[in-house]
Length: 165
Image (tube, rainbow, N blue to C red):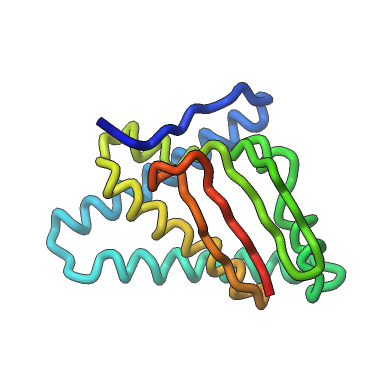
């Protein structure tokens, strides 16, 4: 039995569309990784991580360009999070300061997609960590570090992300 508890809340139609798009992206990611594993590609995880990190760095560069003060992490929060994104991941406990941004995620559409595909908890946890390389890439492009303290895929109640200097 799965230790992952990931129950969606009711959201706006826009957030539901966003969740569906996130699930679609996660489905691609999970199936590509699964096929690489089945084909015996020895460094499949490394290749996936590099591509996901590059994607994050691209997005992070775009976010950085939109920041009025790139040295202020609270400014990063303004360009990184919007209402649809917050609702899609049921984010709360958002605390932003000049040096740090803390976010709690109470739902993960990526993890939901991987569970629907039938991946076991260990695989969901690995895919989650790989997907987080995108956020690590965003942090890198912003000149920040990212601490991922808990994840839903590990069986935690929430995902706890802390971007900091």
